[in-house]
Length: 367
Ligand SMILES: [Fe+2]
Image (cartoon, rainbow, N blue to C red; front, side, top):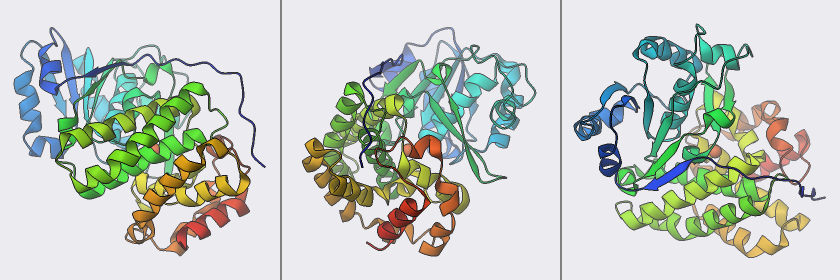
């Protein structure tokens, strides 16, 4: 039976969103002590050098050590090295891992604690979270929506666990949208990050925390993705379709900033932590089965047509053959007990116990 949505809600998002070229934005920065957070790949492609040339009226330090699924111990080690610089702005240019790393630094660098991120997330110590360095998020992928959310995901790779920073202090202050930065993103990353966008929008629609704003954002994200996701895979160098997916990701980010995620994300986390399945794929492979559940329980009749189009799109990607490149069905099903993260699963508009999640996995993996 479908759960009822609550009529008690509020909506607030403090992020300033600017659509312009990165060069235009950087030319406006004056008298800042900036930490650029990015990846070694960004530097290798000459882009860090380009950014350094564009910043003429501020000082800049570079941290380009971000890797996929940032590890909490690596972040604390890096923060200990960067702590002395007293940055006034953190400029994050990259995908979700880069933006989430910048969010973690934003809180860790002003802290007097020895290993602040570990202290906050592993040990649950109180922290002065009001002190933070403002983050400017410049997404180069279209997937996480992290540029407008109050969440940062970091990983405890020693124990195979996902950890979350969240709260008002985790929002970036500014998001800069320049779709030209996504043009060189490889096909697989374009596919997996796009799946994350669709996951966010769907997870927000079938979410008990849904409200009129999140519905507006989530349905807009899905309509954009239905148009631009196949287009971006077919024409990866087309800036207009990259911009369409960037907006889809942005709107899906707004949607989950309101509702949080739900069951497909609960299922995904151990798959990423233990089997290194990319996040968007780990979320995306159960979505068509979850849509089928929505149809059979008639939970969201007003969205039947939209959901049906999403299901057709998802099935066209043959995600089981994608996922088989990372893990076998048996390896995935073995992680079932770790998928029951109630803080996510309880957001789903249908009850799901271990046997329901087992069915979802088995049906998804045998499509
Ligand atoms: Fe996600």
